[in-house]
Amino acid sequence: MQPVAETEQSLSIERKLKLHEARESIIGRLAAKLPTSINLDSFLRVIVAELGRMMEVDRCDIIKLTSEGELLISHEWRANETVPSSLDARIPVDVTTLSQHLDVKQPIRLDDTSAPEHDYKVRFFAKSLGTRSLLVVPVILGDEVLGLIGMHHTRTPRHWTDEEVAFLVSIAMQLAIGYQYTRIYTDKKREAETTKALLEIANVLNARSDFGEVTSAVLERALSLVGADYCALGVLDSDEKRISLAAFKASPHAVTDNVRGLIEAHGQSMDITAYPAMVDVLSQGKTLKLQETDLPLPVRIIFNATLGGRAALVSPVHIAGHTFGLLGLVWSEPRDQFKDHEVALVEGIADQIGTALERDHLSAEVMRLKSALHERYGEDRIIGQARAIRRAIELAMSVADTQTSVLIQG
Image (cartoon, rainbow, N blue to C red):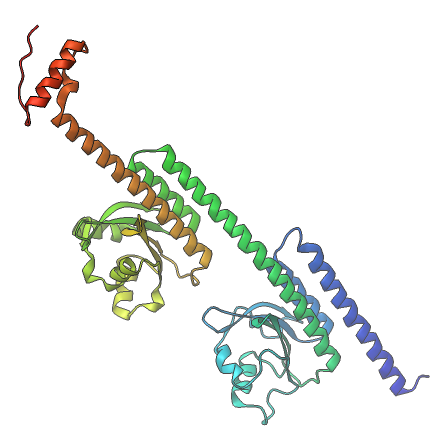
């Protein structure tokens, strides 16, 4: 019969081996998937389950940092159904505030979260997670905290060993590498998709000459690319104080009765000086990213009820460095903050429309000049190309400095 101390030592060695095997398994799976099919979301769902079982905890989760600075539980594994779930929960403690009490770039070990020596904000943070014993390890890329790996005991305290912390730190390092590869891959893929979309729009511009047909096709393509409910193109008048509706397009599922009614009631032209935000977009030449939560309550009610919007992008349309109009896209459902690639795509579409407008104006100007020349020098209405007739025309044009009727006999 083995002594108790020897048995505890053998169990400790056995556990270390299991942790090492689990780490190698996760690294191997990550290395195998990255070069071919990168899906960090599905990978994390598997990882939280493996980590939770290996660490013998009640709950294991991935906590992400949102663009608003809050904490969001994006992935979760629970030992059984009796363990309370916190999936998709937003933790009402922003990272800046939490960093004042805890170093979020270092592992956080709280064997008993209810212990009085802990700061009340730390206890509140743990209570919001429904946790009695907590181990949190950050996923760091450079100096950026991408997220947190959380281990929870919900009922009783637990002592977290150095080996367990070291194990989670090594896993977090691998997840950071995986995230970096994913971000690079995703950015390049989005860049390629944006370039392809803009080339398709350029082909539409080159294939058609009528500006109305071109804008209709481009706006329809823009809706399908960004998933907006409707979009509109406004062109500035010559005094740059009014903007006129040049084109309007809605997706098949969009409800735009109120918007169309507004257009019919007030006409297709409006005074932009009454809307400071639009004036700023025109003067600064930068895209306006609008969320309903950013608006004062009275304006928000109008935006929701009349325009049917919850979010919008408004991008200036430039011609030769001068703002010529606005391209607006509206979403009728709440959505997350706009991504950089979405803004870049909309700005690219606005530039393409600017190209079409410039070409349309140049074509109109050429036709106008050609018509004026024909009115002034109307020799193309004379039938006959004999040298004597052409000579008579030249003599008549050199004599008359205004439009003059000339009788040619012979």
